Length: 392
Ligand code: FEO
Image (cartoon, rainbow, N blue to C red; front, side, top):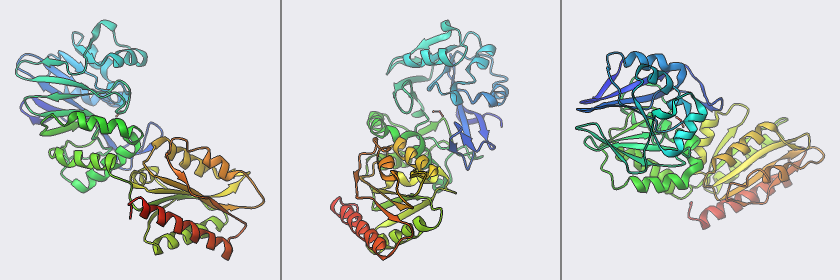
């Protein structure tokens, strides 16, 4: 795809990745993604903001044909999907300075081959003039790596927000015109990438408040020409209380756990609690991550395998712990044949979750009436906790 004009002297460049279905060998990409770079041509200097995933560098190099000079290559974030093309761009524009935060310089030197004298380090709030355009660099450490920053083009009120406000979405739309689709993709992106840094994102949303922003140009997904909507969505994901929602990742081997899961769902619904169950044999973990953004309670359902939880449930639990959702309560249900340490193992795997553990319940063998009664008791407790905490 050719470069696309955003405003006078400002162009989208980069690559639409229609093919990749797994990012970082971990995150499902049901809709592909894009690696966005931006070219800003001022009256005196030209700046390229970020590059692309190295496997797609040919696309960027082709878009840059005809651009005689690049004075600055900005690396907002050292992760290779944005920085990985810098060495090749530098080969064509050897006099360009690579603008980085102090931390990014060391990280890029570790990650790729860039001459040390090519770097130009900027501090928080530093401004670089391109003549009739000026760019301010705003440091945002841990959104989501320690070296991250964003760039604000003052004259156009345009924020180049790096991964923040991004979405893994391959589309021919330059702008987020299909708002529902982009909202879902942004929420998935927030859940998978930003949620573990929720309190830091919260601080940085505050940091952006003094800036008048007409356009947000992220490093993945479409550009936001209605920045208020996407900022408000992030504000809600970060700041709003948990919802009246139980997220229930589960696995069943011989249907005992499945019967318990089905019973608990029905019992919770009777008591006015919403439930989103996820069968972990087929779940897209991105959908589970999205649900975790709002969950008030997480209940894990597992059979006992070799004295512990099912390995797929270990994976889901590890993921939930890493994503640090704001859920307030957790519990465990399932079944066992003759013994095991399922509850102890799972309870020990969630130190990052600031949750109160509601008494877990495992049935011995197939669940009987007494087991279903115990699940009704658990549902009652969850409904009560949700009411007490204002989720209902
Ligand atoms: Fe899109 Fe954190 O890199």
